[in-house]
Length: 205
Image 1: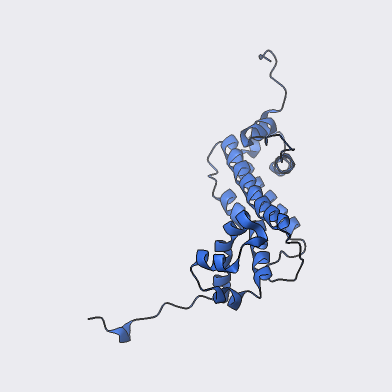
Image 2: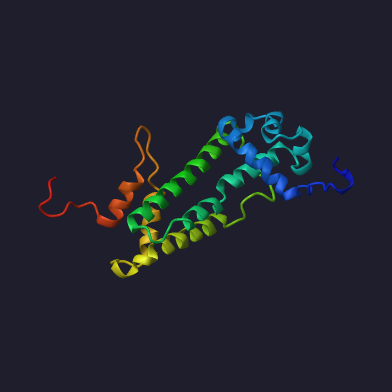
């Protein structure tokens, strides 16, 4: 028979951790339903009582704002960039980086688009809201991560890794498809970056 007097209770989840858990459970629902998602549905997805949401979030709008901030959080893609092996060929490294950045933009665009389409336009002050200048800091960190990926090949490159990283970002971010068009595949972007758009002399057109 188990001695219940020696049984230890699991430590209570901190407010920060509970907010993060609820936000993670809410994000896919927001991507699908936008601001129309109900807190009862969120509670079921998170496996908690509906009242628990309002113990860590002021209201539903506070939770939606946290979801927006999480969708825009660059930490996830920066970890993916940092995990790319530096001993992979440069082409492979950059294709992996392009795929990770495209996936980040797609996630962010889906959440922002769903909230906008469902009428969530309210601006408010929130601890989860991106800080002023956050986009610039995010781009700077992304540029540094890409530079680090390119750095091992510095000796064979015509341009500095920092410059190539800037050009690469410039090619990636405006490459969102126009209406009725498909996006430029990451492999094509990397091929143009490293080899240019001109065919080699004597090669078939």
